Every structure is written in structure tokens, then in C-alpha cells.
Image (cartoon, rainbow, N blue to C red; front, side, top):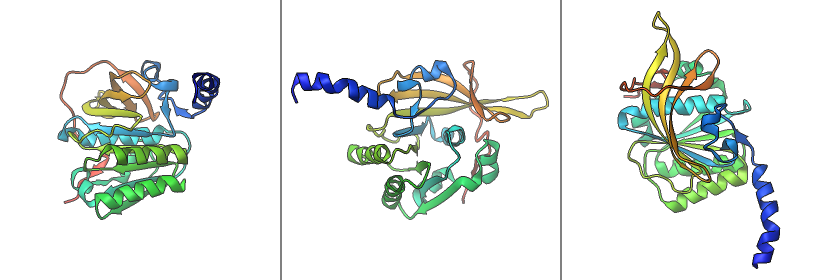
Length: 245
């Protein structure tokens, strides 16, 4: 392709990119760090726990993200025997507390990580799920990361990957978030008003990394920004996980 050809094609390419649907978190301070002012709904987004103790918080953030995505279509969550050891099984009451209807969810428990990756890719390519979620315990390389990214783009569906702390990042993802828990916001009687997380946007293709303290309001089921907090994390503030022995 010549330079002149590139100049002719570039405007239409940029126009096509602008048509990609995005999810706005409703927070300009955060959305301004993302390309197109939101998360692409045709891409892979990776969520890591900051430490092993923060894995329940990362799972809570993932649940809030699923609950706030547009549309109320089916959600397929693919996990493996290996990842269940660290995450436990999803708890319906915890999902409800985040505003996520458990009836939308189809949970697929693969025998191993190889089978889980196959199920994730096949689910994406089928277009059956509005959102595909993978709970992944092992590290994986660039080639597999690119395959998942291509499947999300071709199916025009988002893929959310939850990864444990210290797992190698998948370099082909559009965004990578590192999550640590923060003390929940409570009323005078001790009731839960909002879950909180320290959210580090570590990678954002065509965007800008940053760090926030996010809240998830359990009454209105929406995100908010909180002032930076210094206290250590609370475990599983949303009660999202029921550990499996």
C-alpha cells in the first residue's frame, strides 16, 4: 500500500473505529482515560487482583462491571477446576446484591484450563452470550491472547478475563485493571451503602493509565468516585463468593 492509499483509507478507518459501541462508566474522570470515552464492547478486558487476598475484591468489581453493562442478555462464565480452587463458586445472593440477576448466568466448569480456553473462544464465536467471562488461573502467551482478542472483535462481544495476582499479563487485551479492596461505605447503623475498590488502570490501548478509588452503590447499582483511602482492604465486601472446600 502506498502512502497516498493510506491517506485515502485512514479517514474511513477512523470512522469505522468510532462506530464501535462502548460502555461508559458514567464517570468523566475515568471515561476520559479510555479511548472513545468508554470500554469497547468488541474487545478483551483483563482484571487482576493486586494481591492474593484481593481476589474476592477483584471478583466483586467484575460482578459490578457485568451488572452495569448495557442490555440484559445472557452471560456465560467459564471457569476450570484449577481456577475454582482460588475463586470459589459464585454465590447467587452476592450477585443479587450487586444488581446482577443470577438467572442471566450460565456457568460452565471446564475440567482444565485448556478446555476452559476452548469454551471461552467457542462461546465468543457463537455470539450466544451478551457477555463472556473467563475465570483463568494460569498464565498464557501472546498467541492465545491474540486469538481471544480476534474472537471478541469478530463476534462483536466483550470478553472479561479475571486473573489471579502475579499472573503474567495478556498483552493483546484492550484494557488491564488491577484491583485492590478498600473499606466499604456504611451507614451509621453499619449497613452497607457501597463497596469500594482501589482501581488501577494499568494498560489502555489508545488511552491513559491512571488510578482511582471506585464505589459501587448497592441501592442504585451504579459506579461512583470516592476519595483516596488509606485503610487496608475488606475481604469479599459483596458476599460474592462461596468458597468450595
